Image (cartoon, rainbow, N blue to C red; front, side, top):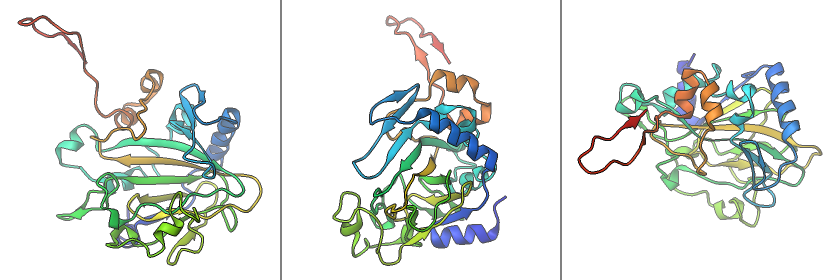
Length: 282
């Protein structure tokens, strides 16, 4: 259930912290699956899951993690956040909604160890359509709303996600944006004025509009930080990295989850000679 307080805070800050969103048993199931997948190097495959990195210090991404089995399929329309995401992405009562209001354009687990971080990126000043924050005519129409789920406790020194509250509405870049940005001289958000660390317990989820300026602190503690991220947008979107859900995944999903993973049914058509009716298989 979405409250007036949550609507106000999301509009004001650009994020919500959803405590105890995922049960301890569910978290343990996901960690056990990830244990089986690792190690996975860049461009290596484990079934339909691909190992992926943006660089040397941002950790390992397990792309298409919803292919890893039922514990991750359960996240697609998890009751702790799905109605909130639908509300902030918007689309109800429009043409988009007829095909399903949502689409997950990227989903991955991230494992980050000591010395690793991701630099500052995004912000309202960029005006990117795909990730935009928008409120018009009494309703939200955000281009991308993320759910970042903690699979481990994330406190001081653990490389927590960092955000700049309110920056989803910024008209100007952070004065030290280039210093802290991805690939910059200090590719973490540590020390960036106005940025805060979001400390989380395993099972907490962070809901935020992607237009907010965000990144992470550098992890200094031993062991690894584990998170899962599902990025939701309108149903007409496309995959960020060119993936497609596997036929096996689509087949075993519930109708509600299938509409989010594959909102548009692909039309398969065999070419016909001119003048002949085309045969189509939905």
